[in-house]
Image 1 (cartoon, rainbow, N blue to C red):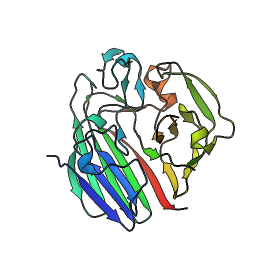
Image 2 (cartoon, rainbow, N blue to C red):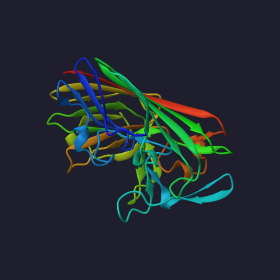
Image 3 (cartoon, one colour):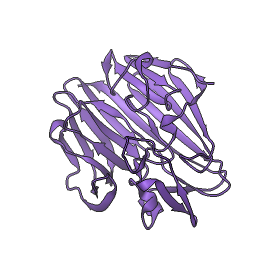
Image 4 (cartoon, one colour):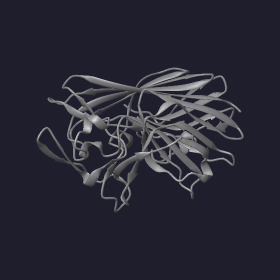
Length: 285
């Protein structure tokens, strides 16, 4: 059973969810001002233009829609822009989620996946939202229902409004350079992390060595993003009015690397679980 929308409220914060559209956040507002890219839930048509959606069971690109795991070859189906050679962001963001519980300030959603052309292993994932007057906390719990260990990546894809004085500060140590199709090619130092006006940044990269909070400030809001996840994807397109700061568990396309687990991918045994959380603290400037 799905529902078209849920709304949570706490103090000045209002959170709108669309469980039926990939368990996504349609919008998050503080006193009516968008904190994330925000769409009234009744107007949202898909997860991709939402404020945030979950990345399960992998983040970013899975190269050329194929992979090898435990000595066996698998394929995934196209699920992104026409002509993109990779599958992107997993499957959960494009599937309806079930509402398990909801209240004024909390909600729990679930998606149960059966093997299909997009992902060959069965799993169940729960996403819990908790809102208070100063923060949104989101938690994912992934349960492997496949009869063998499965490769697992978790994360979220938040979109932030790019305002006139939007500024990003993050302590990071390394950046993955990418080829023209977006697959990582080599790891290079990122001296000083990221500290600058978003309008002057030009990133579409996965970063390692994330420490502390990612801090976002503009003329209206001050945000602190923290997570249990140690990698961060930062996307700052010059021609769009949004930017992305995405907590993720692994390097993009880690499953194709010589040692996927060394790059953050998780091997979850049959019947076992793995989890992640992120917290977005929201206040005035």
